[in-house]
Image (cartoon, rainbow, N blue to C red; front, side, top):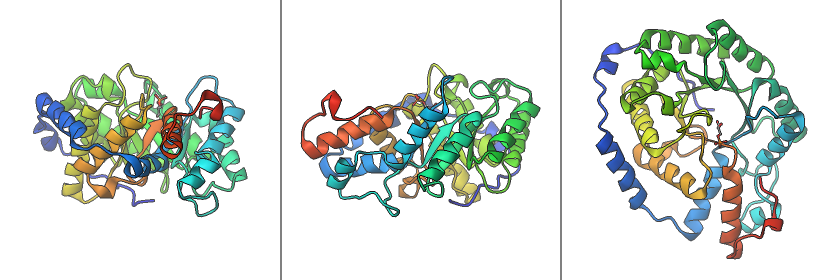
Length: 324
Ligand SMILES: O=C[C@H](O)COP(=O)(O)O
């Protein structure tokens, strides 16, 4: 894992100078979407890279030990073996094709740890847990911090916190900074922390940029767009704004903070657009799972279908593999 972001003092002057131009961001998205047409082997390579950047997620009220265990099997062997072999890889201890993490609720962390251990991949696949009153963040701070400690104690190696959106909407940046700092502290000395901004609920792109900066100043190792439960989740305009904030933070403090779009990313085409965006705005250094993740529950099955089509030249019939 890459070095954790230690954060820095809250710089309100920096926030006051933020001014995002919506039209320019929309133009940047159009340019990106028209800039590359990735095909054939290149497309397959981008899709394999996308697989390795997935935080394979289940966040359902009906999650059980058995579906979490299935999720872990899928994380360890994300593609059917024959398809993987056709793509030039073989499952084994050194196979790089697995998802970056599984992402579950705190009460399912133990199940995920046990399943990954049984599969001998606990050292290779992270267990991420959402915490801090996911998805709304509307709980007393004490309870939110306690939830982080619980998930860490049960074996989570990454914590996806949600911020209190009301602090952004009322411009209470000091309290937002303090809360996120305490959350990072609750993660302890090793666990990486992703801060979910819930961009669809922040009102303006200026707020998205400012919340990104505050989250990084308070020590977040990743900033994440959404919980997947808002009515608007991961969109490319949010992604560009957050990536520019990450770039600016890196230029100033020399720490690389990761990006995690999450929520509603379901197609191979979406995945490639996000990877191209990251390449263009942040550069190749961010194009790996140390600094980039997709939070997704359904993306993997579409990638699987697309890779199948790449290898066989036809789309799979429903019976040819189970949906991931
Ligand atoms: O953090 C991950 C998201 O909750 C996943 O959202 P999704 O189910 O729309 O892929």
